Image (tube, rainbow, N blue to C red; front, side, top):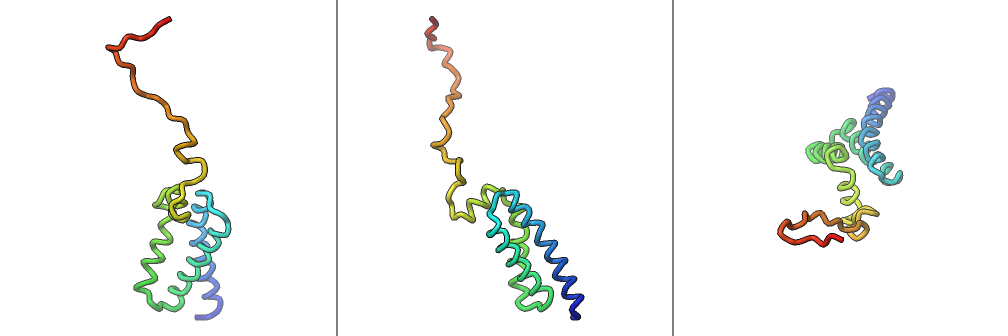
Length: 112
């Protein structure tokens, strides 16, 4: 493949990788994690486009890696990446328990 064609393939793949990377940014991931994700996804997709070595293994991995930010909810994806720790501020002890039980009609109420 001539150099301009490789450059065009690399740019097109780069723009395609930026779509799920933006989704990860909106989910609140750090820039370093997004950059690592985008560089890895771009490198694997470029390898498949230029030299289809082990294409039977790499294409399913690429599909899952590309579609995952769209399918999985951002909070759940962050929890998977952070190895099961809940996001900050969502612990059950941070929020008071609200009593939503309706009053019993047979029980007398204490009115002043």
